[in-house]
Amino acid sequence: MSSPSLSGASEPPDPNLGPVLIDANELQARVTELGRQITDDYAGRAPLLVGVLKGAFMFMSDLARAVRLPVEFDFMAVASYGSSTKASGVVRIVKDLDLDLSGRHVLLVEDIVDSGLTLSYLRRNLLARGPASLEVCALLVKEGIQEREPDFRYVGFRIPPTFVIGYGLDIAERYRNLPYICAWAG
Ligand code: 5GP
Image: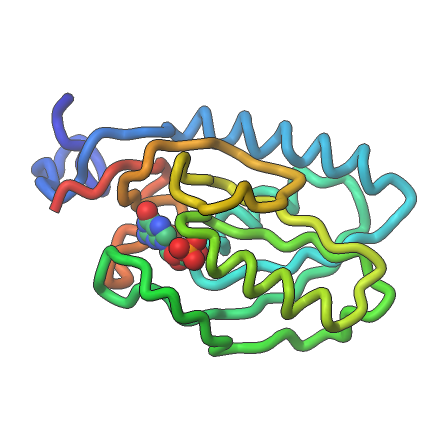
């Protein structure tokens, strides 16, 4: 497969972009399904969507528009890989939530689960704030990496354990605006 270009057919192919794993249509179709499922599961409630910045911003935005309920939003940022493609195992809150979680039905929206360390840290951290419920919606889960199967209610796609970019996911802050998910070939 040839490398996709970043901004259109007139651009030269970017050699850093590997094969497309999930194209824009597949993403939108799955996000719509997830939104429908969340709408059914949370009927009569007003869930609080908690997005993990920066990677989840695009997924969260599309997901929220597919949920037909009066949702509220909050965001937190955790330290990421920086410019490396390896898990550090260290999770640090860089920006905390603005809202109080007590008594709220919280849905944590994650971009990608690799080792699962970030998710298990966030789960413990958010549970300690006394929400009425806490569920996780992860767009991507890498297969065969996590020591134990992490506990999430909603998963967009299970992918092979390869480094991916696009649809919010970066490498050194670039490529987040790709409308699809592709492998990093750089
Ligand atoms: P974990 O703690 O599960 O090992 O890593 C989770 C975080 O690492 C994600 O929220 C994301 O920021 C980053 N990450 C993990 N795998 C990838 C990947 O394939 N591509 C990108 N861009 N970020 C990743």
